[in-house]
Length: 418
Image (cartoon, rainbow, N blue to C red; front, side, top):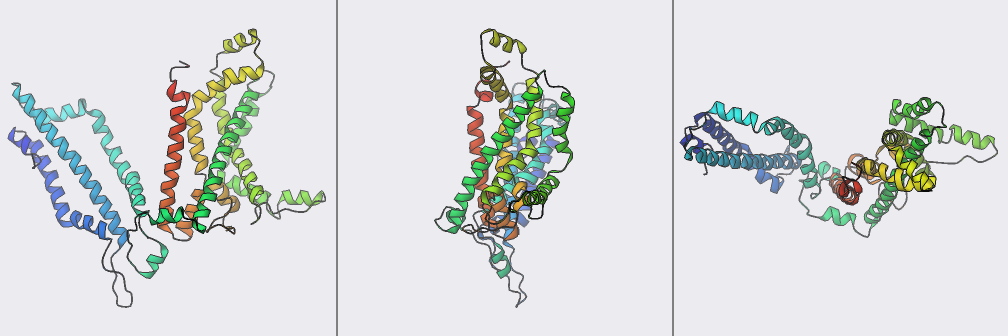
């Protein structure tokens, strides 16, 4: 059934048929006057380069790619609506064939809001997600397979499709490739260590404050919460000042007879990394502590009583009872923390931003992939390379997160603590 709405019109569903016909006409009109050309331009990315000397503005390859992407998405929506139209016509035909009266438009509308209310309610959010989330992501993926950069823009050249050349450059044996693998290795180490430090640091404080011998628990718990009252970047700038050449840390080192140290200098690789871990822990441990505190409050004290009767030591109780329960309840949050640490842009951007180290391509030895992506795409206009790195970041983070979640008790032993 090629013409949308024809099936409904043949079954005397006039209003519904006309609506489908209008959608069909709107799509055909769009494709004739704009969509078809946008699809063609998506593959060519323009044929007329800019020439300011001759006053030729030239084709805008990026806009063509964006409009072409939008045309493909609109076509996808149209196909989905067309399939829904066919299913609706077939459903109505079967309904009438059983001797029933053809549903009126009002009855169809009531059925849609009743039986398919979830579809009606979710249409607008789904459209918003497609426009504001999916479209930019698809556009970024396409960008990774082009040579779009500041050099191309300034020269007035057209952007071209270059297949996997950006990825080949990242995995090459040159400076770009070595920079990528050094940053990737450091990024993984940073994310694993930060997540472990923040998670077990928060759990340790929560266990300590959970002890009966601790007096004034509410006051002690309030102090870490105060860290949330201060914006993160202000805390980072405060730590940067504290460890700066003229900061209080170096002042006291010199007062004690020592020599001031460049904590964030160009050769301060590990001192900057260790400070980064500690500062990140300062910012993140309070949230882990609050989370662990709530979970520990739900632990059954009878388990500990039984364990003590059986002669279990405090360490055994922690390993066999407390830790499995807390990990079971917090695995999704733990994965979220890992993702946040893997893409933690702020820590080294504020503590040590702007430094470029020898042996690195436009990066320092404390930069994470997200910092390198920013440096390449925003500071130095390597847009397509930045897009390629963002795809790699997404693949790594998604694979690790899914693998950990599927293997975790939260997924495989869902009924364990019910």
